[in-house]
Amino acid sequence: MALAALKGDKTLAQLAQQFDVHPNQITDWKKQLQEHVAEVFETSQTSAEPPVDVRVLHAKIGQLTLES
Image (cartoon, rainbow, N blue to C red; front, side, top):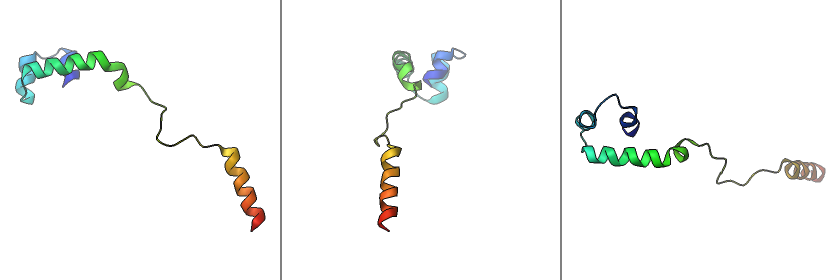
């Protein structure tokens, strides 16, 4: 809805009627999107999992293979 408001093809009143929300709410969402648009569309490299060190894994595989 905020993107539709930014696009400007329809008035706030038209959008409010189409989505059954108050025009002030659309204005608030539009403002929030404008303030945080970079955050919304940025790709994040952060992950809940730590990065994997392949060398350590290969060493562990070698160790386990020798123990078998």
